Length: 95
Image 1 (tube, rainbow, N blue to C red):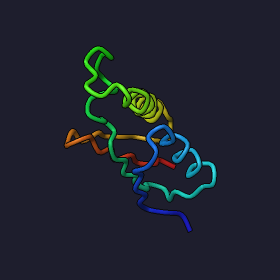
Image 2: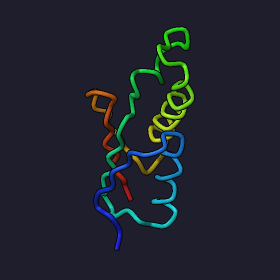
Image 3: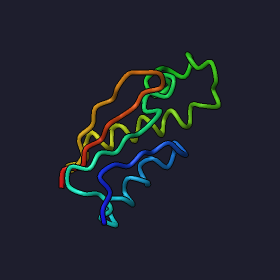
């Protein structure tokens, strides 16, 4: 039976693949919500590398930026990013 709600908070560089697997295996009910943590990731996805206080985080920041763009452009997903702490996205699956 498909899920109505999924929470994602894991390896930032794999966020897109987690959602792809949910979609590929039809694990999301129509209107399902996916709550994704750290989608602003200390602002790193949207700042210049010269602003990095922790340069080692840049790779994950880039992955988060790419994930957010992928969700935005996906025809069956809608999202809102809540700007609290490191960002929380609510992604809705339109079947």
